[in-house]
Image (tube, rainbow, N blue to C red):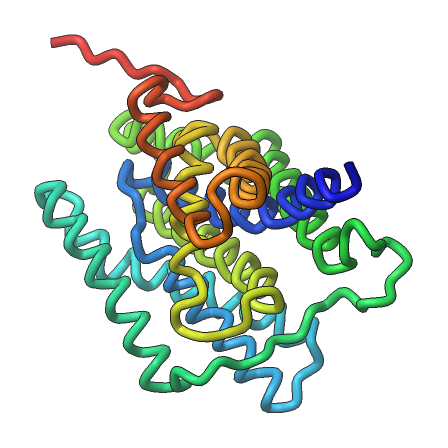
Length: 290
């Protein structure tokens, strides 16, 4: 029972990281109705920026805050310079652009920072009072960070004029333009927020898997599965799906398929959700009149 409880709690901690990346995926999907396949590589590149700032002598939280700001600006610039000119392009062309961004960020990280595995510090002390034998302090902290981001985003979208304008732009761009909402700026802001969320997720996962250009490959797949399970158009659902995937990954990997086949769990979940309930647990079914 202790082992089962440990695997479950550890899965929740890992699920918190998946939830953060799934949240970034949903942010961009709501803005563009496309999946950003480069989200994981963007988060990885942001984590390398944080590592560089730490190596330059900045304190952890100073490097953390500056990395979030730089990631916001970088993602917003990508939307303005790369994605916005593609808004009338065929969907396949947009997918190719996302794949191109993935390769570019991966190659840039390897070229600039190298492929040697690096350690990345955790902001949560190993001997903190909230750590235990069942859950380390970093695992508890990762869950807390994910929940705080969800609460902040929910409050932003629900109670602020800017958040309401972003929701309106995502749901109906033409009507939003008619009432004076700058849709282009809202899309840029959505990309910026997704970049900032991805940076936080990268800095949470790096102390666990270590820092290298390949660190987010599996994380992105699990996050994608979580977003689909919860609902790719629902931020709360995506977070819930991220936690579900984290727990299932740990339990199935430990007691059913073994650690070598854990990645296949995400693929099975993706296929199963697409077959049984494509809209996800909390997603909306979209009916198109023809």
